[in-house]
Image (cartoon, rainbow over all chains, first blue to last red):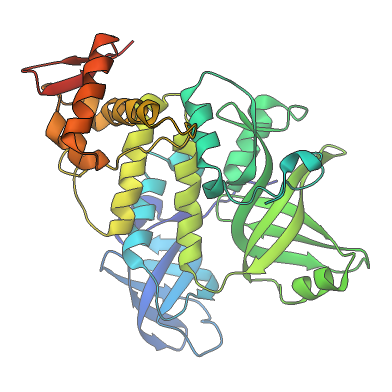
Length: 107
Length: 279
């Protein structure tokens, strides 16, 4: 077992706490370009994801795991299509719990 | 349903299914002082929790979370380093974001082989298995690996971990209610504060002895014991209890009277408001 490099659940607002560290988040894809995807976080902030994006087609929701480069940009290592319907509100609440009262269960 | 007593709980997975099918056990162990109860359902956990358990409780005693020893666990995460070099087993590492754990799936039947074929590196899966420590290394012996189709299950899994954890926390008196509420809030999609939320009546599932009166006693007590109720200085009005428990008021009055007589609850600002006697 290895818990040395966890990826923290974040929404847009929580990203600034983890600049330089590994994070995971779900975005709603707004647009994609070569080498980057622009998306909306579960708390309605804009996030730019860099890195070689996964083989298209992208679904509406995309999970990204990677290093937070700034408070609104992630360098992605792992991309997962999360489908076209996803409960963003629940995910957003989970991010808050995972960084608040129950942080010790996660990181 | 299988009777779990047919199996040796540590080697076979007890047919008891998911935690939700055994809520009474979880509640019971949290409300009683019993420690180290065997919880034979499938418990949702994170890798971080497993690591911590082994650090604090040592390897011999197995997995103990909040004083409840767990046999089988359920995890959700990404598959990586899948290794099929051996004919009889498939090994892989599961990364759930909180940590990584080594997993092994014995391949005996064609069913096992087929299930493992659909699992590749980078696939999100739900894994159910049994924790084993062998030659100093902790491993998850997996008996089911299923790719996740609806990704709300990912969110759900972690919320379920939080729920199970807080339900069985040491200081549950406070926490159980709080968290059940915040989880409810999460699913209802509202952003409300504690006081205004209508409380879920805690329906006691422990007393299925057909004794209606006994049940109502417990229902009232459980309702009044909720943190949001104990926090209210003036107590809870009998009408509210009736409404929340969906029991006619006239039926309640007698029971409330006897509870008061037994010294389990007391009336507060007037004869209609009650509070639970904290011991």
